[in-house]
Length: 251
Image 1 (cartoon, rainbow, N blue to C red):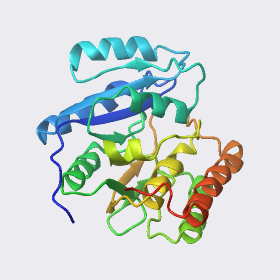
Image 2: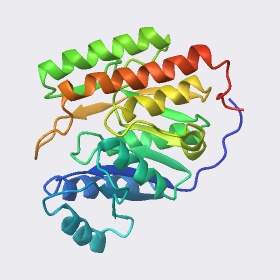
Image 3: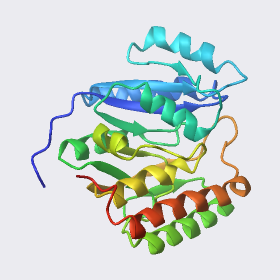
Image 4: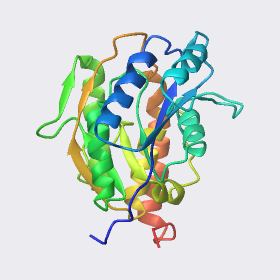
């Protein structure tokens, strides 16, 4: 592995829609653990057209946590992918991690990502389904669909990663810029970014992570609405992998 370029700021990008109950503990836990581990950071929470008090809660939290940098998705349309892209575009870090507003992702695992990136990896991918990984209170139907989808992605792309669909991943800024433009406006962005990164030749490390079901609110991912969208993005990147003759690979 080539010598790593030292990283100076870790941007946490969190899309949030109607998450007024979850955000206080989510933000507090990230700040507490990042400060304890001396991770220089900013937390970019993107209010994606919330109809509750999400924006007011973020304004209140900002008075307590100076590293919180809330923003509202003003792209003209809402959607998980659009909110993440907005957050990426409005973050300042030379490394970024995408986390969920519902506290399902562990800040301690994000610290592990930060260390992997600083060790020289371009991407840090977590897996809930390798030794040391953990899922808590995962709905059975969603778990079955998750494992089937990830199996198909793994076979179709011939990659070792078995948890591609999880949004909780970290990247050097050079990877984000090298994978543009992003097409996925919804949860299918969670597979577009890592698959593009792998196909385009960026290095990655896989580490076990934990996942915990939300305490508040309702999940935003609707499986029946996402099947065709995931298929489209996977097909698009698959065509790049096998037919682009390396035109988009990292130079």
